[in-house]
Image (cartoon, rainbow, N blue to C red; front, side):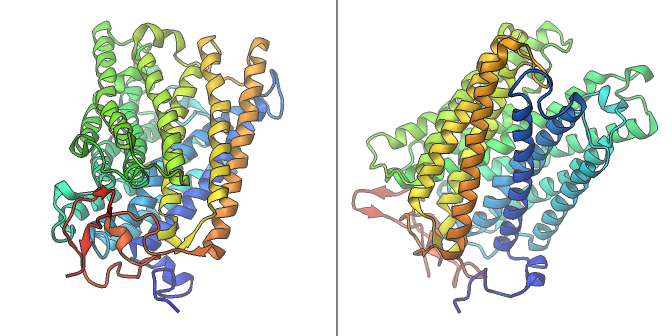
Length: 534
């Protein structure tokens, strides 16, 4: 039997105690997908309830709990860890030409910390639940008699996993690069993971402390956020969004890194503006720490603070635009191959561009005041986060599927799924822009009759989305077990992960490769792999 990471050491125990980054990535993958299924079921329940005015399938209290579960699971258990923990863990050492990450034991500990925190938070489902929304806004989150403390504790625990993973990636990129792999030859996916890791290490402790203070507030009435005890509930919003807006880029920067790998490979052209794309990741990371106040435009900030935060928020469009225009320029006059990963890259560009442009609307004070806490914000958030991060996750899952499992997925099924997801997503969330602009508030269990038609369209779209994800799970699982055997480099890509067998051996490389070329050297005469064995 061929020796690879899937066959090296048999039995459940060898997986649960593994220090192989590839196996840890697979465990992350199935854990994230399990929580994605759970969060998706709650989303479908929300849309079913909102298909008609009045009570449809649940009462108002149950609705509040369901949208809290949906948001908390999708943000903390799915979108934040999905690409860094799954794709990052699997691909980063391979792209570096390394045997593993810098701290393999810490990597395994990070997974178990994530799993422990997620299970603690999910245990609230079997108790009194939580009804605060995923943002846990005070003072309501202090006074609710649900088991919100357990959800807060779970999110607090998961934060440690995020920080430790970020530290591991930073050290790995600094210390484990193969000979010849200079910073100017680093694949853009690694640049995006590096910038993401900096955000994780610097911002996550702020959220952890904030959640801990809120737990103390609930248990001991310390009076930090509770106005009845002299506290300031808006202070919680400042603390929370100082982390949670950078967290948007923890979700989206790795997604941009995946797109930066897929587009040149399937355009057969060198990436346009390599340095600009790499440095713009750090520009986004920097600005991410300076814009949290746009979540508080109607919370009593001074006019000066509102103006400054509005201006800084619009500044995010500059490094983001650099990436988008560089991707488009890369495709210009390229020999584009419309394989499934490339289709998802196109989907990312379409959905993320809509999400980004509507973000400029929300950064404009006059518009923001009109649409604050309406479905316009819900649509914007989902276009950026779900449309961006999940489309990119699907691109990465298909692009690196041969590397993960050593088998090919059925291309026709991939295209059908893409059609279902892109149409279902737009059908679900674009009507919500219209609903929000007409004044339909978010988080409400009921709505006025004039919003019925658009809500029903949105609900039908959610069914298409669900069908697409279930079909993807079916054919990818089938391909994982019975798909056609994959060659080592089915896409003719240059980066180092494609210069080892598929699936990779336990130690990744028989010998550490020497890097001799740039990772995006695609010309008419062929491609130029980065590494060679000394």
